[in-house]
Image (tube, rainbow, N blue to C red; front, side):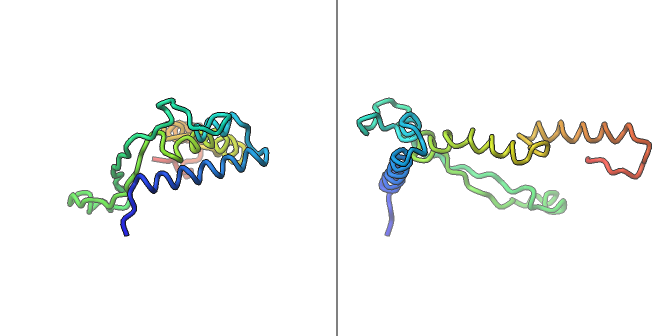
Length: 145
């Protein structure tokens, strides 16, 4: 049986609405949080703002280049791909945007000095590490390359 994207989206939307309303009832989130996540106003009617209407999904690949050996890269082997499904304002889009700052805060607190924000942050970390090693006299300490 083939399930249309629209009916799947409607089902997911309903699940997100039901879970969010339940969380509000149990006072785990505020009415403002519920409205931000679901687009439901205080009367539990959908807001008419276009930001609450999902866009058509776009599917694109990210290639797993890290899975290839040097020889495979030289031979121009096509790497396997992971497909990403992106859709702004999809049923889970706003929930993810609402959760993200909370999860980031917990990650930073848990990881403390080991937290790495992104690639630029990682490169700064590696550079600082290598510079700290260059001040030491011991040549056997490994540097990241």
